[in-house]
Image 1 (cartoon, rainbow, N blue to C red):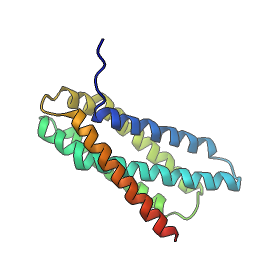
Image 2: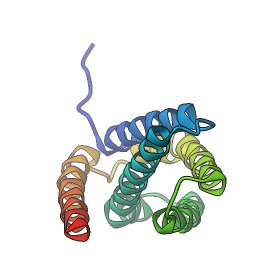
Image 3: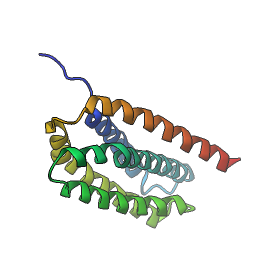
Length: 165
């Protein structure tokens, strides 16, 4: 049996799994009042936000526009855009927060729920349509998305170091 080459959907799915793992780690720390737990939660939340911002940007810049050209039913893509906008609003609130208090925990939890819903729709509907679309080069798109993801992560790391200086 031939294995298919990894494609754009595989890249996005790997991002989904990585972020889901971070949300789980965060949840395990919730409830702890230890100072070290609060610090770890802030670090995890920052990492989650960065990963989600980059993920959303590569979807919006590369994946969704190509899909919009290749499939007839774009309602799912419109919904995904609205979901991204809602998640970005919560991300902005988390990034502005000074500490991991109860409201911060609630915002991380709701963000995780948004992401879970979004991931389910992507896996069961959007990725299925993408893989069925004959016009899409999902393998080539994966390479393009990986390159853009590395650029964005580098930019964010540079911006983070500049902010700390």
